[in-house]
Length: 309
Image 1 (tube, rainbow, N blue to C red):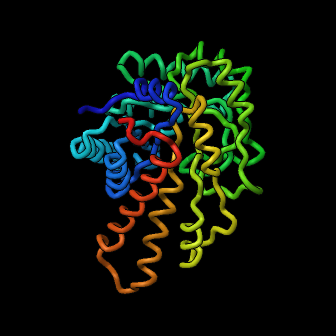
Image 2 (cartoon, rainbow, N blue to C red):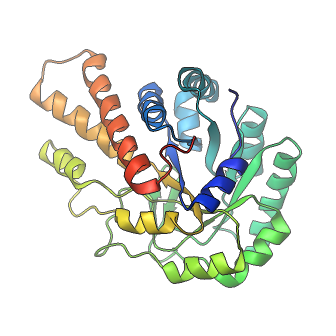
């Protein structure tokens, strides 16, 4: 099975009241952990590559790892550029075999965001690639995305119809209270379902995307802190809120920080308990297994997409 786009995935997800997991990848063990979980759960899958991951691991290596995952699993997998910040980056990924790209013009004025997004859409659609746009800005830090509380802004429902109509995007990332990175929420995170409901009313049947949707699993934070980390009070999005969003217009939920935390906690624990260990397989293997465990949990208990491949 070749790589697929998200168009059919999102149609089924919207109609079925579930969301597709979009998991960020940086190396072989992360790709393996995610795809082994998806195969076991028989779930459709989006593997995301940020500009930082692409620079770190090399575009060709990541694409070939994902192609290997398709051979091993037989699953429908889309490969997606996460937070592309320029036409040139999106073009490079499209030309390099990605089936989906995000152009993030959310930091720009409305008209400039439309102009940039439309430029990417025109190029992508002529080559059979789908495009995700963004309105609103999430607080937090993840790779090159760094937005302060002061600069964060909820998506304005009054803008969504015009943005989608004028750009031709295939999906829309919105800001309703999620946050990038293992961000320190001031109290428990609360999603603005009133905004989501209004956007769903204005864009019936249109797939919505949630970024920054990791739950920041407490056991991983505790393990990291126990073995020298400094993440006091880190919180994420409660999983019951993500389940509710997935039952509505949200068809794609992005998860990255939970994978990083699972991997880091596992490696820190092993190296602390076995100081003389120097075989990477002895700590990367268990880290891969922990990623598979957390992805299985998300697919089965949060996103609702298990059995939907």
